[in-house]
Amino acid sequence: MKIIRTFAALFALAAATPALAQQTPPKLVVVVSVDQFSADLFAEYRTVFTGGFARLLTGAVFPSGYQSHAATETCPGHSTILTGARPARTGIVANDWIDFAAARGDKPNFMVYCAEDESLPGTSSSNYVVSDKHLKVPTLGEWMKLADPASRVVSVAGKDRAAVMMGGHKVDELWWFWDKSRSFQSYAGRAMPAAVTNANTALTTRLAQPQKPMPLPAFCIPRNRAFEAGSQTVGAGRFARKAVGEKDSLQPFKASPEFDDTVFSLATQLAGDMKLGQGKSTDLLIIGASATDYVGHSYGTEGSEMCIQMLALDQRLGRLFAALDKTGVDYEVVLTADHGGLDIPERNREHGATMAARTSLTDDGKEALLGVSRIGKQIGDTLGITGPILFGGIPGDVYINPALTRTQREAVQQEAIRILRQNPQVYDVYTREQIAATPSPKGPPETWTMLERARAALDPGRTGDLVVALRPRITPIAVPMQGYTATHGSFWDYDRRVPILFWRRGMTGFEHPLSVETVDIAPTLAATLGVRVPVEIDGRCLDLDAGPGTTCK
Image: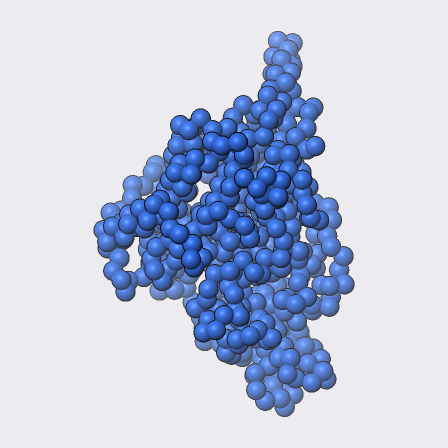
């Protein structure tokens, strides 16, 4: 009975406390996206976090969040986080897509990057000018400014597409790391604050110095085992690197905790210099932490590298929160990810996933996306059609040359589907018409059919004629190379599931094990802020009150 009375008292306290934290809107909202931070990684490391994640774990924990669409890439994922909209609504269906009507054709595939302005002369999808023009919907920051023009929006990220897709069309400061200049950059003509100038100076100094091997925490020792992935050895690294010269690859720096440190440092400095959250209005600070994604691609999601990265990120988050605490600002934090990720098949097989394999759908043994050229040539030889026939990539969107006649296009489509379905690594192939005829999905995202997952990422003007799904645990990298041994982008839940964590001082924490979606984040924050959602969205408000009250009003 004593135990029962104790739990009853605790329940009563939990029911009463949350209202204290929700009487007034926070003065600062901090949104952190950890690129490629899957729900699996969160589950693996949550018991050993002692820094920033430990604080977040005392808040509202949604361990089974979903980037519910099939296009589990960086740009689509980031487009959902602060818009409340799935890619079918945001228009961001992939990192890149084919646009045969683009003002400039990037021969031979007319590729358009999700965060570029392809209409500018002299540009290409690999030599682009960053733009927000392809994002079709407003973001939380824009909702906030509509309600209160004095609200400020600051977006800082390791990748331009992360900064742009979360920041939206109206930002006060937007900065990303630009490989070509090896510094933080923004849109042309934007004045560079002292914080960015100082960050770039520090970056130059840092790159010019070698990095000693980072310490191997005790928790990481069992994961410290080398695996051969093609010509690459992964699994036992500790991020040692030489000084980075002007012609040296940035991969050893970006695929390490060093990269996140530079991003968080700049975001923290901007928040301090601008006194975010210290005025009459509520401000928004957005941080895109990209290093986990680079580590995952370079070394896989297991091994010493990811272990060191996870624990370093935990401590880095702790330093961010400590800096915000010193300001005395009442702030709310949400942390999530743009997608999950899959470990290298070599290690997966040893760990019992015997079906894990690398793709065979290639032209030259390197890139699966090049397989469309081989298949297109095979179809051309069969049907007597000359010239390029197929564009795009496998898995993902495949486009049929619009210059073909209708009869030719129908024959090409049928033959492409036949060839692809014969491959044992292909799960299925869907036509754009099939996907469009599928109603927009409803209900728990883990119950969605494959077509419903594809429907959530359908934009008729950007989605391919065919969408190809590989079987589970097939890695679309035939031959690993530096910086690219593992990846994401599939229809499967290891790429779709991500954690969603909310925290605010004074709130009563709880864990909600059932599935939610990343599109639920923006309306949840809007309700906390008392901001009206001015457009139709896909997400819903998540109640952050642990008791009988509600934060969704």
